[in-house]
Image 1 (cartoon, rainbow, N blue to C red):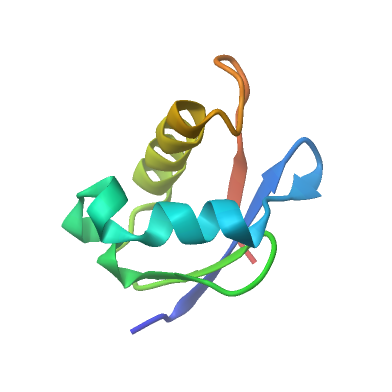
Image 2 (cartoon, rainbow, N blue to C red):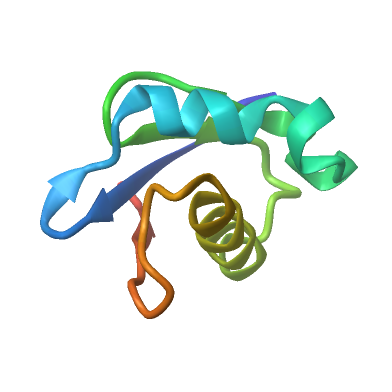
Length: 81
């Protein structure tokens, strides 16, 4: 199910696992496409094959802004590792 390993970096540092865990909880994101995500440490997320990276990046940035983790114009670096 979790076939891909994704690296998430913010300001040249791995995103804290707390942020990733918060995002991965479906009751917060309310989007079924992200059901196949599980944090695996700071800056590491395991995802299923059906999770599109660009949509993941966009949704994470939006959620992290709502939570106050990142600023309005700040971006994440999301890539398969």
